[in-house]
Length: 232
Image (tube, rainbow, N blue to C red):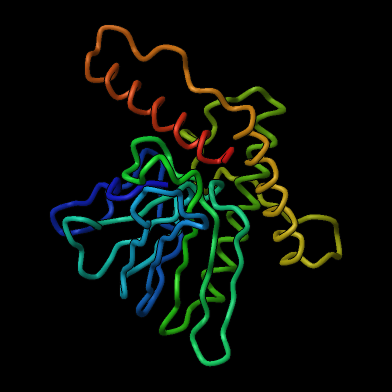
């Protein structure tokens, strides 16, 4: 996940990534909060909030744009498969809210001392069920596509696949499709954790590019800091 990485047009519209398309846009007011599950000593608390905005589900990312952007917070984005332990909850008197555990990316404007953060979307004007249904369905399809790509040796499938190319996941005949999609989403969480455990940062940045070299060093430092923080 990252903060302020979403490219916007002059009109404030999302500039999509290659092969990216918006599949769902929330209605009404959506609040966002990003906090840390654990507070490292000597580090300022992480507390990013927006009281009103719009959430988007694309075939690649979950995006949030605040209604009133500031210099400190203009956008939030994360890969769909990067959202783990997702759940939709409600309180006795408050609106429904969606939560997820997300791992920040290096150089994504989240301090490296925070290996994971909690993301919460609060649906002040309804629309939570439509959001959850679309998210769970897409995550199941993406996980299914990743399994197929792994079996066929396609390492860059996520950068080239279109939404209409994502395989449908229907599960066994006669089963509960919603429950099956949720189960696949849970397996995607487990697969993502296993991938993080074995994932390594490239040894060398692109040659002959000073800017790329500096960025690669910064990203490796951030990733090392997150790994150390996660072990504590």
